[in-house]
Length: 316
Image 1: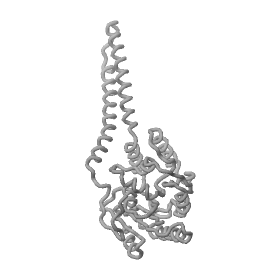
Image 2: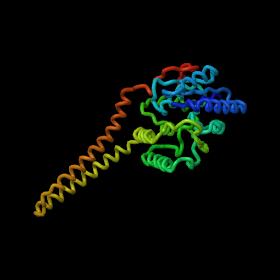
Image 3: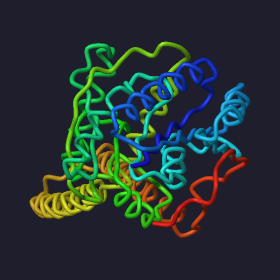
Image 4: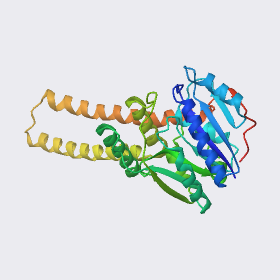
């Protein structure tokens, strides 16, 4: 079996050398145990501004096992992952971040689960003790929110997973522009299993997911995989409509009873309330219309500037 290891990165010059050496050592051990017969490492440079691409060129020149895809600009982590998967040629594909917080040593256990008949193996963190309290609470809220909106997610699973060639072929049929991989792979189905691990501290470099990007990522997931917000908007509109009918009936009753007192407050507050809700929900609907707009344009997920040791991507 040939194994592909996909590693997306952005401005990771401080960690590439160590990551490459660690992954190569892990793959050599898997070869020695007979768990794999061949391998490739697919680095995807997501438009880095530092020396990342220069280092990757050197690694590719030293070994044909190292494949490099470099984007013309920064397209985002999810699209970089997708590019690596789509250009992989292995019988199984592992996606792994470049910071080594997810240990490559777990790949052997994931391969065992694959041999037991599972097509997807999700790596899940045992606990979040090393996260800040804020990160821990927001992560839990995110997963629970997504579940409540009907999105099938693996709790505490990021993007460390192993997929079979069959799943890669199914993934090639996904034609979405707004991709959210943590939702796409559970959507695909197939037999799956979970392995647990302890997440390590980043040994060098800085996180590429500050709060702003985390919030954008969460919103992308919600609007890509759930129409619950639209249904909530419809329900709120219906509730306001029924309430308005009751208020109109009450106003007529008070008028005919001769108890009404003209007032500025009773005029302005409903206007502000209804106007505010209209703007809120028009904005929400606009988010979905914006996604439809991007899907209809059929722009490519990414644009490749250069590649090294990479042939034509296999067809699924």
